[in-house]
Length: 123
Image 1: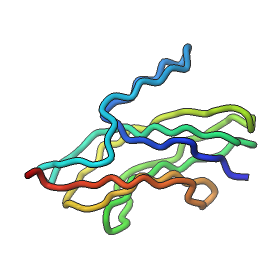
Image 2 (image 1 turned 60 degrees about the vertical axis):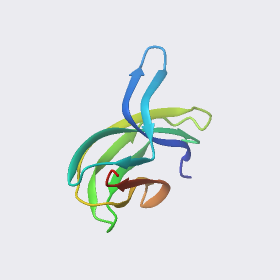
Image 3 (image 1 turned 90 degrees about the horizontal axis):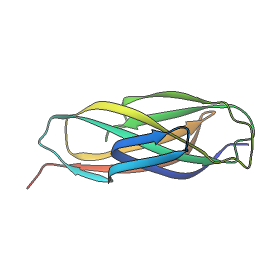
Image 4 (image 1 turned 45 degrees about the horizontal axis):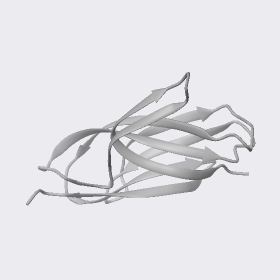
């Protein structure tokens, strides 16, 4: 059984306070106006549930042509289907042209969630 994605957000900065479990997101966005080409740094915040066994969660950033521009694997070592799991991943990627970029969460070769990020030139 695959985890359920409750939330998937992009933000300029994410501050996670592990002792309290509090997570502050600053500068949440779904679209950007950038002089192109540009390099951007941002964070992806995710919230999962129904994690029945430890899993490898793929967090990826894909370009308008489906080329993988960044990402990697996060190991989720919780196996409590009632637990709420939150986490974040940092990205520093080159944006060459305007278009629809995508943040993807994958598990066991299956797409769990996808969030579009629209990029345009200012003006």
